[in-house]
Length: 200
Image (cartoon, rainbow, N blue to C red; front, top):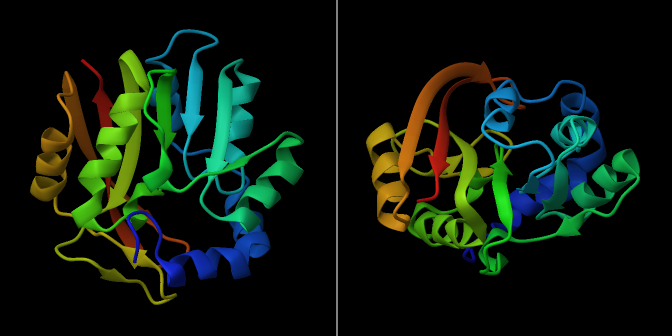
């Protein structure tokens, strides 16, 4: 496992890209409106792990300037076909420093990063945000790292672990973590930890 990529997890998304996008590509994230409400019209957004491009479509529809990325080349291709625009292949560990974005949207993707590396990735995200830029990221709550029944790696942090990781990664001016229930792609019940952090 490298800083940002688990081979087995990446392999799953390469094999299942088309089917995954068909099943997850119809309804935008329920957390998206709250994130967008914190940004000014036309704000520039870096989207990590865009998947099917469903959230991208909604952000573009509302007039935001979105750079969509995904760590899986096949997933990026699926999103390109939907969006009719380029989608960059970007591993989390290769996010380059430089304040450029008003917001970073990372829905259901940073949860695949090893906990030992999550702080470094959060620090890199902080580095590409303008001030006061906003990050949204969510995680599946748990007590220890592991894999789901489909073989995908998850960091499964507790609320305390996640809060500590964010606070140690960068000097955020605010951090809000909310809990929400839901279901995963594998059909299991999930307790989500939805994080909204603002750059100082």
